[in-house]
Structure formats: C-alpha cells, structure tokens
Amino acid sequence: MWLTDKASEVTSERLTSLYAYPPGGAYVRANMVASIDGAAGLEGRSGGLGGPGDRKIFSLLRACADVVVVGASTAVTEGYHQPDGPALALVSRSLSIPDDYGPLSHPQTVVLTCASAPEQRRADLGRVGATLLDCGTDTVDPAAAIAACVERGWTRILLEGGPRLLGSFVAADALDELCLTTSPVIVGGSAPRPVVVDAEKVHPMTRAHLLSDDDGYLYARWIRGTDQAPGDA
Image (cartoon, rainbow, N blue to C red):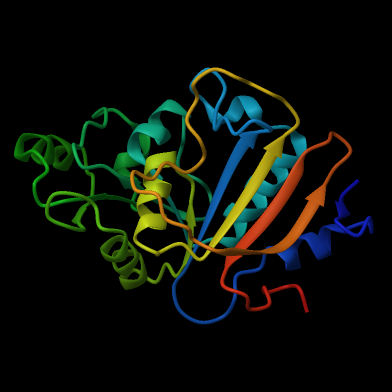
C-alpha cells in the first residue's frame, strides 16, 4: 500500500499523476536511492538498496521520460540495457565504454562526450555504430547535454546518476527535480552520497510530496524553487 505524508492511500492512477512532467520545454528530473545514513549504493551498486516499491517508482519514472541520461560507467556497472521506452544517453569524457556494450549500436542511444575525448576511442566506438555528440570541450557541459537532448525532441529528461554526474548538474543549476528513495537500512562504510559536488553551495529545494510503502521505504520528490509541483493541484 502507498501512503502520502498525510497517511492517505495513493492509487496507481494518483501515483502516475504525482510524477507527471510539467508541460513546456526541457525539464531535468533525477532519480536516486540512498540508505538512511546517506550511502548511494551497496557493494558498489545502487540496486542493492532497492525494493519492490522502489522498482515500481523506477519503472514509472522511465515510462514518463523521453530519455534516460546516465554516466557510462554507471550504466555498465549496473547492467543497463536499452530500455523499451525512453532513449538512452550515456555520458563519458574518456569514452572508456566496452566496444561490445549492447546499447551502443541501438538507434535510440547517444554518447554525450566532449571535444577532448581520445580520438582512438572515437574511432573504436564509431566502428561499432555508436552515435557520439560533443557537449563541451574538456568535460560534458550539462547545458550542452540538455540542448543535445532537446534537439532530438527529448524534453522530458531523467537523470539516473552516478553521484558525480548528478553533482555536475546541481553545480550548473541544471537540475529541476530530485526524486530520492530512502531505503530503510543503515550501511556505514565509505559509499558516496547520492550527489557529489566538489564545491559547497546551498541549492534550495521544495518538497513536492513524500510517500511511504509497507516495506518502510520513503519516496521524496523535491523540486527547485517554491512553485506548486505538477500533479499536486
């Protein structure tokens, strides 16, 4: 059973409306999971923190999106395959993606990289059918990455990490929304936080909603600014 922070039950239809993208231009939503003590993964993978409810939210957010933007190393580590619905945008400065990584040759996959990426790797990935898009000079610029998505008609953008990629969008003030699942466990250790930003700076967010389920997970949706969130009318 799904409950809001007001202890009222949430139907599947209401759940879908709560996560609807707002109308208009490009909108960047991030989805991350963390333990109670802030660990973004268990044994190097975020999937170890999830549960049935988290997987349902994960699938719902993908169903709402036009494109999933994710760090290439995260995609390979987590075993991403080409999703049936949204396109896939892999972010990589080094282009150190295995040549046999299946999604590379899919027509709905692009690799967002930068002009300084190694020429040999460009050639290698080109030979296996990868579509490479430069979105900056020495690093992948979030604004350029968003523009590249919009150019392809992908305005509903879902950012799935890892923490440093998400941090780059936060630092560039290019994140509109963060959906954060809190797993009811304490992990300890030295796992990274969901957002890794080198420079400290406060980025105010407003809570749009907070849900829970019978397994004790919390599902928070945070939006930039103080405007009312879509689906909350």
